[in-house]
Image (cartoon, rainbow, N blue to C red; front, side):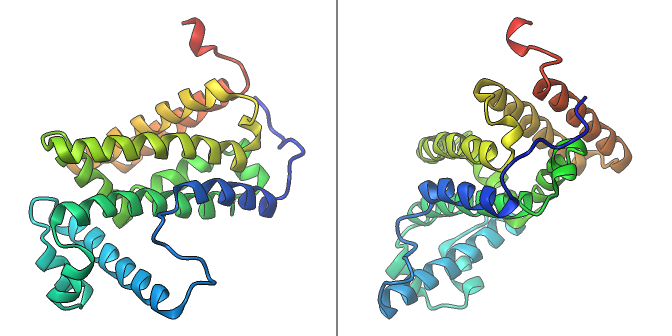
Length: 238
């Protein structure tokens, strides 16, 4: 098992590269700094609405989230709400887009704070990702994913956004974690192992919470990822 971080670009450079990848996921309605005041104000109102929707989804669930409730949580009038989102479907579609973007943005920022030792030897990225599963953004993601199981129109939107997110997320991993840079296929497998296991572990914690067992599982995942990274196992020959 490797114990020393390889010579790589600085954390700041890695973060800038990942941020450039993130731009591909940035919603078109989020303006650049050079737009006029009215556009900035409109975008900020949308963000306020979407943040309120995320909170409603995380706290109350998908079926109990309404445009009226979101408007109340956002502290805006119903008229202002309808100006931006006339239906729950329109709101939810943009919540999906915004949630994926914000999750990746936050992950990139948090991953970039890791030292080389924390990142490579201690595999602290697993713990950073685990902590992100308890944010409102991820709770909203879970609610939307579960609702998409039985809502065909929601499923179509969610699936297409998930596919885009998955592609851009894997590229951001290669920028933030350069030790995986030359392992395109392995990154995909590692990401599937990590996210699917943590997702199941996260849901299970609500049913039968056991922090010590959850920590053991995360350590085991970290060990498997190291073995995959260091070519100690070949998932494509199993």
